[in-house]
Length: 353
Image (cartoon, rainbow, N blue to C red):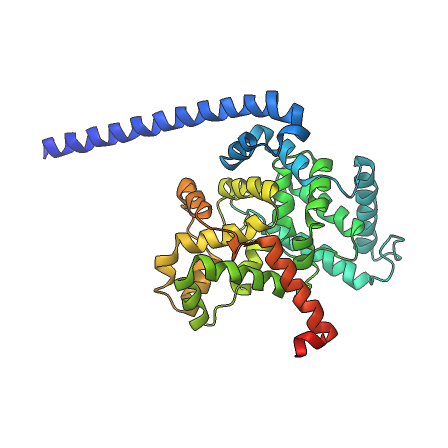
């Protein structure tokens, strides 16, 4: 028994030593990466961001200390939002909150045509959603250090885009940005991110365009994972069942936060295509388990993924996914499907024939 106990103790000591060595190695790697990003890449962003070296470094994960800066540059600011515009939108949002809380008169805002009931429902949903945003962190809930910041960004956005308003899931995206950027910069990145075609299609619930995205996804699903694709078809498991939540929150609700941030890293590099590639990576990683499950168990499993996902194994699975079908890339497949849909809507004679 004493010998066995000593063996166990030795094994545990060796395991701890290995973990410590790996942690030291990782810290050194992150330190070197920070220097590279700060000294070489960021000062020469326009010329270096698309280079092979930077793309490879990007895939390995952006160091947390420079992540926000890289995300801001990669997302861009096509909407030309300034810090002053954020302050204006926030002031309007605060005025609306005061008016609604006191039952006062209608607030003059750029949301003419949107009823008070709609605005109140949107603000109530924000309040409810904030309480459910990363609850284990306890930093966004009432009394937490980032509660007011998250509330401000979401409220300001409803004033900036009253045509979109607040949609469930937005709080997770805003929260991830708040953890990596100053408030006004987080709002700028948030607004520009939601303005991307894929995000706008989902948040405005454009059913036709959403179905086109699902159809494009299924092309690559069948190409990469034919056995699992057939199993899903047999069980009538459609992409909307699991993709909607993943796309709405950009995986920040479904994956551990550190892993979700790494997905965001590459999403900022590769665009919407990487969101669907990540989905296929998840399906590939759990293919053996999923092929043994029925509809209910698959839906439950994909709705709540395991919390102990190993990051390297996860990204190896994503890397194995080929986003090319019959020599056509994601953007080409999506464009072709959109064209087909437009022609069908017009009742194209060629399609009728």
